[in-house]
Length: 351
Image (cartoon, rainbow, N blue to C red; front, side):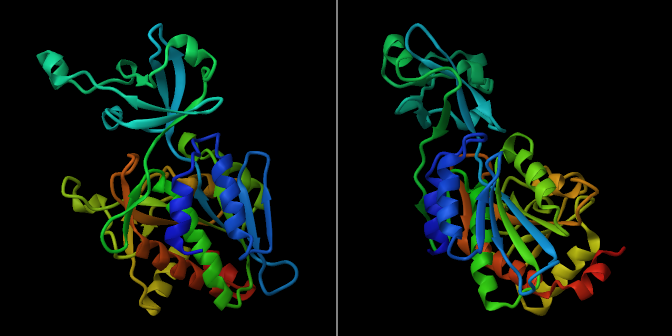
């Protein structure tokens, strides 16, 4: 399956944090042709293992990209049949006005998030950002009809088809971070061209958007020698200062900061330069807020890297990415993995 096709399948499925089953089933099917073993752990992480050339005592490299997406949850049904909701993960309420949604109850219900007509707004309303508590979903049913179909706690996702823009650009929901999952998939395919010594664990993690929970438990279980997180970074747009962004189409951002092992980052950069692989740098002095954070501080600590895919309009339903950045990132990661051996590991990890 091609990267774009898999990304479309993944992004059009529902997988709000804590409810990732539809997505995980697709991931299992996709990875089974390119890995040796696949399992799903108690929390729901999908772990696909591609064994190295040696038979025992192999180095363990764990790659992680989260499969969950931000979304909404039913909090109430008012007397007129309007569905009130709260958020799961970081959502800007301003992006929700006039959106189409799917309420995942006993059956999926199509609905819309309405907006008060500008004709009826007073000056204060026009100048004030809308709040979640002021929004509601209209599905066209009465309260009595809805009570037989949905209940408090049901999840809600934005209804958004995956679309192709010009060239290799695509847009849709949940590219954060299913683009990272597809990067791992492409890396698994790319590794078929290399004789790698390390066992590689491709982990599609759950519940990243609500506290990097899947990465915490899966890293503890695998106990890798090296951890590599793949997530998204802020793609350049006119309103964001350049120093905070990555240029789309120019390769992944290699993160520099306290969350990142400096010598592994230097080696990754060296490999990119030696192989003429496009790359950029992302500066993040803090804990990064990604699976890399959980990986680094699990057990006695794991030397960790973070690769960021340039993405525009993060945490909206029109996230936008260039497929080439996914493929470039996969090639870089495969080459990095291929050079890791028992002979050079200690030197790479020593400060």
